[in-house]
Length: 356
Ligand code: CU
Ligand code: CU
Image (cartoon, rainbow, N blue to C red):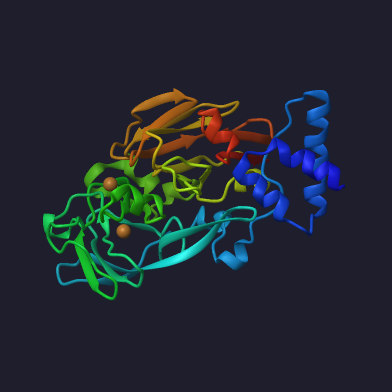
């Protein structure tokens, strides 16, 4: 099997190959992948190329399959004016993460994971983020949203940098509704973002203000129940620190949703909150096979901004909501990936497993 494994490894991108070679206890699954890749080399067939082996999600304390549907509504209480206050705790910590089998990255994180927690709330809620910096560098929390300049989490403005050992509570009202993000805004910005200091921030639209269409996106209304919702953060990692990425993914781990397809109940609609935080490449994209979808740019409208498309691109920090229907479709594996082929082959490749 040694020959087979190294032949397979030679087909892999250089960074991912390191993981394949470092895996002494080649599993049955890895052998299978290796012989598949071997066949590909002999017959020139277009098999599915991906990293051999598995990332140890347990050791990392982060599983992309769990992250996908993990929306953090914080600690809720009621304030004097009758509104809901939601409190969240975020701690910046340096943490090594595994981004492909055997490929480790020295990340800076919010709460130990990349991305940080997906912060979700309802439009108009009062938000408090209790932030502490337990990392080795000064950081901030910069939210995309409408708030006071003092709370903007930018170096040199308002409260500014939060130095190691310091804490600060960011406070604002959740608006506008949509699919947003937060990230560190310390300098140099590209390094602080790329190292892993980012996460999604979702604000559900209030049906009392915006009418019936808002109900399907608000958890307090029955119209939202049939939806299968996922958070997908498109990211990438520069493992050689040359300002270019070697590994790409949604939700950090290369090829994770190829090896662990996302199960979709065919007759229930799908909503993807899609966020692009890829550093160094100006644009990323989402492309779905064998189906089309509607798209809401920034998630700040209740009518789609694009209808019936199968590819959407986002620049860095752009985000939006994708709505897909597989109703009546043939069960099976529906691939989705970046349509920049390079990104797809370096990890940003995934599958929806549609079941009846
Ligand atoms: Cu930072
Ligand atoms: Cu930003």
